[in-house]
Length: 268
Image 1 (spheres, rainbow, N blue to C red):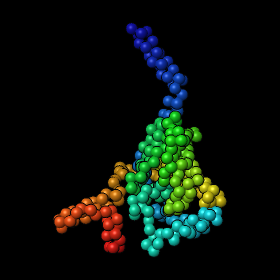
Image 2: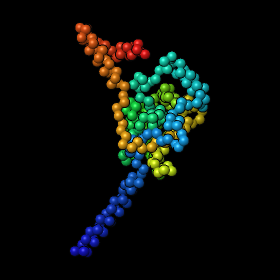
Image 3: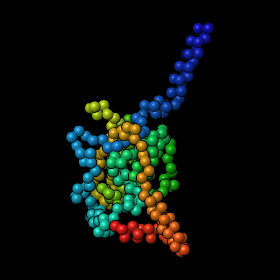
Image 4: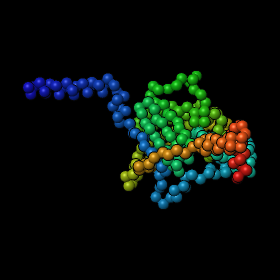
């Protein structure tokens, strides 16, 4: 009986070793850092919590065309300093990642995909890894772009292309020819706190004469949650209220969203 059990154990060990040998990615995936969780800004000792969220300095390495576009956009904002977020527009890249931390950001990691959710507007992006990739001819340009990830040791490297024009990016405006390379890595500080380090390098021949570099650090938001934070609900409910008032007045319920915007502007 003991011999049979010993042989059975040997078969299990051999089978496990055979599985890891035949599926080399399995062992590697188990050793990869796991970014899953909800993160907030990491505050360096002695620094202000919002020190990393200041607007960029006036002088950026703009090309002449980049400077022209930058100046023109500032004029387009008008006296009210219009903000696209106030019009329910997602931030897009790279603002989504540069601003994250003041409001929490969530990472959901699977072997073939890293999903990133920013609490503001519920903005979401996906970094596809391994064999999970959309053919270039099927990719649709967007504010977030298309992100393709790969592992370099314990560092996740993501390259983002297929972007639409981003003249309204808060800190670093860009063109649709921009390319963004990000590096995500896990570590710990002197107190043993887990730290997610983030580096971004953006190249854009239209806007900049040299690469734009950004660094951020996030810490776990213990027992944190991503809560609903979207403005479309508010505008939609305001439209329903406006039409409800029309019905009570015996009028056709034909108010438009533009009427909601005008009513809001009149209050400001």
